[in-house]
Length: 199
DNA sequence: CATGCGATCCGCT
DNA sequence: GCGGATCGCATGC
Image (cartoon, rainbow, N blue to C red; front, side, top):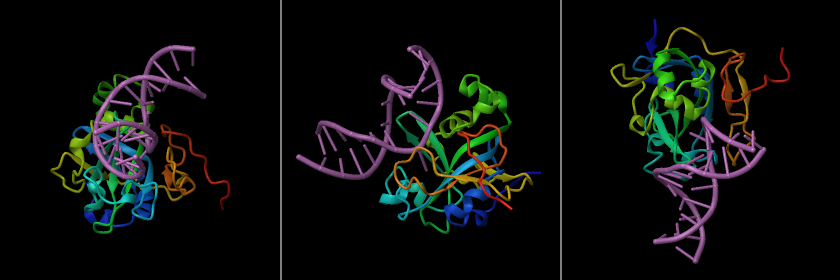
């Protein structure tokens, strides 16, 4: 039984929220997919974040309440979807980088013009096409059960030891290991090695 | 007002 | 591996 996550769940900084989003389920109508890979983006303190230089019409959602979607267009053609973090209206968001298709796979494949199950949602731009997310969903309230897009918990816990590594494709703050992924997951946007040491 | 370039994907080489 | 597609914003004249 899948429960829509409450606002309180999102009321934490992006870096803290990011690993907790792993294994949660994003639903857009009949299309549902499990979160496999994310990246945290902060506020003024994070030079790689869209929020680093203050609010604009494009990134306004990052400066609003937590638990909303922040969807933006990149390179003129692709969309990227983020979960806005908290607390309150402090800027920050978690970029969704890869999902695993759970339901509505036919619709996803149609939207993307075919493709292997493992590739449908493997990448920030791809998952937006597969789930049918674009700028019109910017600001959508993920905690509203009657809204178009919701984030649910189907009882699968986040991994105790998520894979971590540097964020992809950025030019500033390249060293910060703010990318998180489910260990052993098939269908990541790019490979992510486990930490070299462990108990 | 002009320019540059970015949290990307795909097809061809 | 490389380049093309192509939008919105930030920056600098």
